[in-house]
Image 1 (cartoon, rainbow, N blue to C red):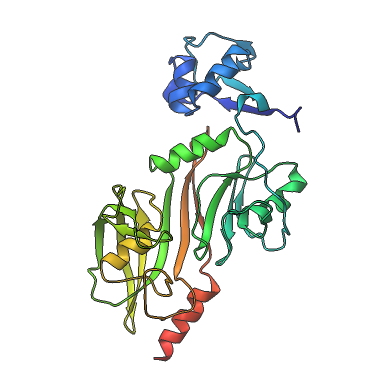
Image 2 (image 1 turned 45 degrees about the horizontal axis):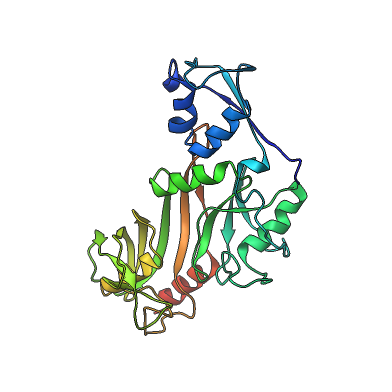
Length: 304
């Protein structure tokens, strides 16, 4: 894989007409400084077939060719052991990224050396036929199902990670919570830190607390439970679970933050991903189908 290159042929958008090449690469395409330096230094960035200095004013419609090599990256090829691709459900795929439907109960990635069976291991088996490996962009808790994004080359990883951090990629979750007396919509603004009594857990205003903001809207109420749609303004560990529990409406089936056993499964699903595509900045909305454990839970409620 050492000889591999990643080549991109991109069109200068109208918004960058007359702006310096450096602004296109750094500000608009969001390439990190070290990558911009590498491709400039090695003359692997061409405008309409010619190498140009970074202050060169680009024209809308011009073609920019970018070529990256493994030496441009600290970890060009993540070491991911391939497992069976039988469980892989692809929601969206192009040359740069994959959105897959993660199964409830699968880890996003292994925690121990030599461990397999995680979502990224299954995706590695699927991508092996394309001669590439999956690159981690974000995580979902083991018991959370639904849409999760992986990169297919190291170039798009910092772009996608930045787009999640600055909310240009929006993720919407579904959750069933205990109780029906919560307002129809609201914002939960409570800092989340570690739980000094249980290292698996997080706690409101715990040690090393960081700001956390969750928005929710109740979709329906049934038999003492509420189905809520949730979006995150920050990405703290267990944020949805800790915030809703703090409201007095813990997630159904949450083994850490809910003492009642309304379901054997955590009722949290990564439902929609509103993607901003690398380079082109086109938007794409990807939806993960409602999983079986949600459907069965609702059927049980209907019987009461």
